[in-house]
Image 1 (tube, rainbow, N blue to C red):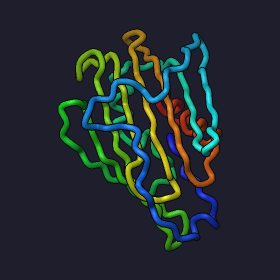
Image 2 (image 1 turned 180 degrees about the horizontal axis):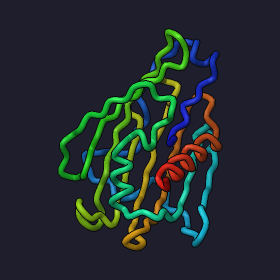
Image 3 (image 1 turned 90 degrees about the horizontal axis):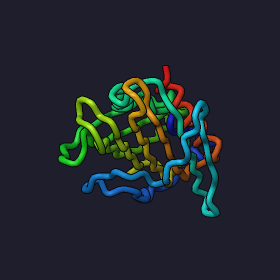
Image 4 (image 1 turned 180 degrees about the vertical axis):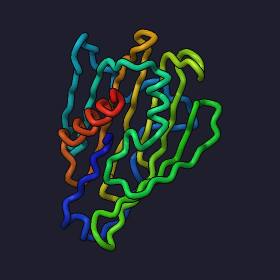
Amino acid sequence: MRIQVVFPIFSLLIASSAPAATSCFDFETKIVKPLHAPIPLVAGADKTESGETTGGLNWGALRAAVNKPVSVLYRLLLDHHTTASSRIDEMKVEKITSPSYLNLERVSFLIKPFLFVKVRWTEEWGFALVQGTAADPEELVVSYQKTEGTSHIEHLCGNMVLRKLTDKSTDVFLYEEAKATGRKPKDTMDGLMGTLKTLRK
């Protein structure tokens, strides 16, 4: 649900090369701060903000409380089906050894929107422990970025920050920025809201 992979039919039918994706993170270092400063946490409500730059980059931010501990949300996010669009046809996860991350992964996606049409891209994901232990995390910063693949996703980066509120609740901050064919700020926000809904199930 995080990224709504929706491309207009005519755009998909036009052959295009895939330039190198713009990087937001260097996973050789431990990422402990999100790209966007967390928006305020509002008691009893889900806080959202979104917008679009003059260069066509759209972004969305969401902050909310979830009635699950950080450890449970961490396990949910380790399963990329939690955040991936339902349109994904194939997904491959490659584990990367890193002393800086609880998990560092390279995730490859494939969708087949039409007969004989395949759209592929790869993302890097890092799960960094900020406070607590691996068994009982109190704060995690999850970072991801598109690194290669379809030119229809020119730029994609984001963060998920999980902070312990109580033993049974977590402060969740989600941020994503993207530049992709047919994608609007509402699509980005809908993806973040879809992730929040899944985390709350």
